[in-house]
Image 1 (spheres, rainbow, N blue to C red):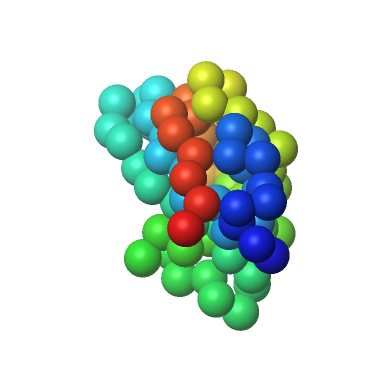
Image 2 (cartoon, one colour):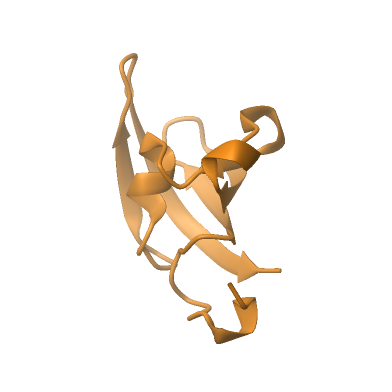
Amino acid sequence: IDPAKLKQDTVAFGATVNVFDIDTEEEKQFTLVGADEADAKKGRISVTSPVGKALLGKQVGDEVLIKAPAKTMAYEILSITFE
């Protein structure tokens, strides 16, 4: 995938997404990668994970709810970059 050809304002595979965790009031960063490249400790999440699926197609300013077994997480998308 050529990052230069992707819409820079929409979350897609390869995007680095900065989010604001509404519950903890902390900023977090995720990079959407393939399942074989995922490493949660490094912020590299699979596009097929619950968080990855929830972020795909979203834009800056969107709020995202992710239902996990333990709790529901709420994030606001602050920025999207492709490298």
